[in-house]
Length: 483
Image (cartoon, rainbow, N blue to C red; front, side):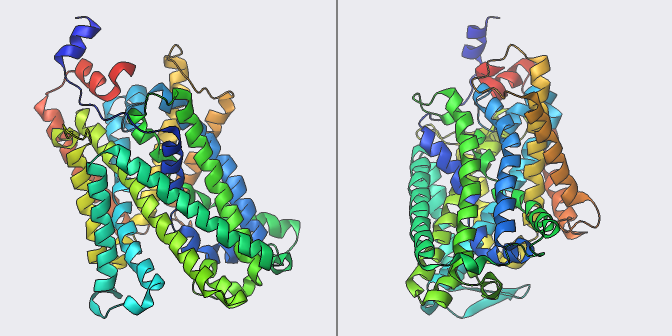
């Protein structure tokens, strides 16, 4: 059977092709920035000091570009929905593709409730006069009307926005990330004008010696991947690139989002640390916001920083949600999960059932609160890192097994790909090796992971038992014209 006849006989549900280059950059960058820089800046400074933290994020960004470049090579070479699902399928077959995709889906899907819950918490900090009395408590955390409504309202808005077309969600991402950067520019400019570099002393938390600098910087390096995950959202939406987007630019967007994200963290830490002695600022509830009021009496700048974090949460939620729905859709379309997840809205060309599935989980967050969702964060980080490792391995393997494959963006040095493997593997060990500060907690976090994988495996076996796709058909559904 000829390729044209095969394509005509076997429908492959496709998504709208309307996403621009700058949409891709802001999808990745908005997903990276989020709100972590507000919540844990004090912890960063305690561990590394100002310069140790800046060096940690700068070097961490450089190290992650080795992984990012593996993504940059594969994404324009195989620009289909689901990113790593297709990469791992082409490199290692359906079993690894299912494991990679479903594990990655956990990371994306369950960051949804984390984000919607955090929106309510940050709303109460922005508008304390609107804070209401607790309705109930779970695990020591109060849940009130004022914490429920923002997360639920914005969560529903993101679901509707995504359902009615990727162009809407991409443009919304561009606007929110642009506003975020504009707000950040204002408060960092104030810090430059009003701050004093002498407030950075001691520049390292472990002492201003070579040993202290190395120790302080290393302490931050271990945290960087947790706050830089998000660049891998771009491959999930690669199938929806507009005609004006050259394939090579998909790779450039990935690398750009990593570099800009790393620089954002460096600039913010320098700004916050220069406002007042950092060893005093870390005593504040949220140093990134509180220093402007404590040092200069600028209440409005503190509010601006919190607003920036609020925008970061929204852009992160939208970017992660885009990625989650595409991974689920790719698995459903490709025969790795129930067909239901692979359904597309005929009118809007969006993965409607994947949108409803991920959206329903996101809306649970504000209802159950922080106590239940906090344990999923470390598991989500492990999911991303495993996907990074598989992608780096696939990049190396396809250089050998598919040398003729068109690669619009090609990693120049093979050592970069091998570095991606080593860095990804080292990060995974940081989470699973007993005694590590980032280790998964037994039995809760291991139980969460096991439960999700068992649930997915049942779906995988159920779809496989239906035997509704031949290998040739599955190749076409997952890889399309790039099979």
